[in-house]
Amino acid sequence: MYVAQEIQNRMLADAAAALDGRRLILPFKKTDTRPINSDSAERVDIGLCCMGMDSSIAMQDDMGYNSLFALIEAKRGRTEADFASAYAQLFTYSEKIYFYQIDRRFVWGIVCCGTIVNACLFSNYNVHASPDMDMSEPAGRREFVRLLVGWSLCERNRLGYDQTITFSQELGCYEVMVPQKDNPRKHTTYYCNDSVVAAQREFGRHCRCLLATKEKPTVRVPDGEKLKHTVVIKDSWTVYSHPSDNNDQRDDDDDAETAPRHMLFKWPEDGFVPVEDARNEVRLLKKIKDGLSGMEELDKTYPEIEDGGWVYQPLALETGNNVSVIDSTREIVGGPDEETRKDVPFCLHMRYAMTPIGEQLRKVESVKELIVVLYDAMKCHFEIHKRCNILHRDLSDNNILVVREPDKTVRGMLIDFDCAIDKSVERSALRPERTGTQPFMSIANLEGMDIERTVLDDWESLLYIVCWVGTYGINEHNPEVDR
Picture (cartoon, one colour):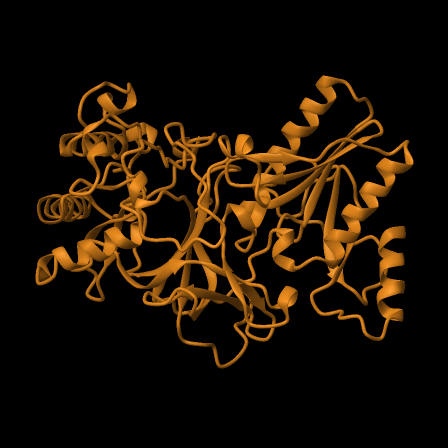
């Protein structure tokens, strides 16, 4: 509070100071409390939020995961067990921020054990902790004050927020900038107030799927009312490899809680221009569309891209002009030394808008519909493999959707080509690589057998999907499935 007051006094007293984009870091009033929108009994020790520079210097009410900037976990002692417990809690709660905030690229947290404070930055596959700041020493207190001042005065993207996703108070919805297919530095604005997939884990691709439309609302969208959505926007972070690296094995399974196990991490040089590698989903979907063109019977059985590409973050606040930089791990953690790079995957931020919009497989209303949906999806799978030489490798109940036509008939759509490979490009397709969603992985895949992964592994996954649906039922939500 003292630091916030000092910052406010100095900024407001300086007539030349730019207040736009600056903020005060203030704590919430309640401590050791359950956030108001939490669905569990977890209790956060201290929460911090961002407020406008002209806000009243006071503790804030109504702490929720959707408004938290950073979390603080505190312990009285400073033993190894105290630190381990504080970090474990911070991991759990930070995951909730990703889930509730669609515009978070990374998350900040603080661990305080006794007089020792560590600031933590949670990126896609790693946690980066600061050196100890001892609050009983002047040097430690000085470093902590510098941290708070930095958070108050830095660019918004340095706080972990995505400047290409902003909430419009005037429209009552999010404005999402989607890169254009032919020029990712330019964008098309979509409008969104609903999502079908939130970031589910602390580490991984942080994949989100948002329902959106290009049509700008003419009036403010009333609370609780949904826009008439026309596309799905998929937003995720992918481990980047240059086409020359395609023979390196890797595992981009979002279920993994650690960094991809088989990736030889290579960071490109500063100022590099990314290219679409062999496993780039946009590239694969473009090839699929070209390969299946003219096959009307496969319409709406695979996603088609309207816009999309690498995300560029604007740096107008820092540079004073319309400059943007490609959003990557380097923009989050800076340029680590060579030794650190070996353990930190280089990720790029990707976003694209697709049609049609589908529903979860459990939304089928009869066994007949289930059969139709699975047939359509596997017919699409067969033709993609035959005509495009692309192997999906991640069949699951989440990657086969139900598409309902205006006349109520249904189609099945195969989605999520993040784990797919173009066998005409990658020789590594002939080598074993563990990918997929665990309950539906083939035995050879699950056990890591040293045999070629083929289309038969995907068909085996289909059998497990049928068994899964037969066990848990259709057109219902069974809590056991999530557990």
